[in-house]
Image (cartoon, rainbow, N blue to C red; front, side, top):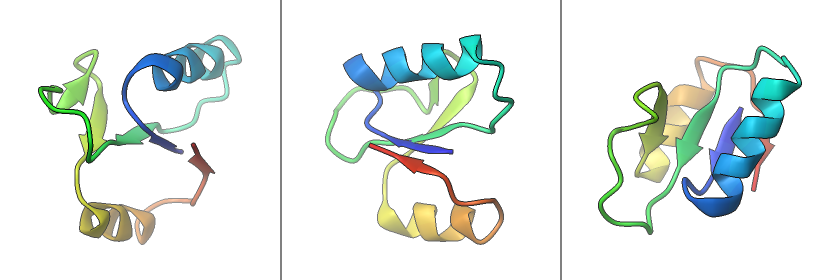
Length: 66
């Protein structure tokens, strides 16, 4: 699942997904926010460029949330 954004609401959405035990592989996309780590909470990748999305989408099932 690709979540657009990596702050505020995106983190709340992550919590809902985790609590729901949906078992989805979660990745974030944020090309706007500065000073974010490469991994959110040391676990979830944050993609920074559209090319990275295209590369990942070829490898996984495409679920998208914004």
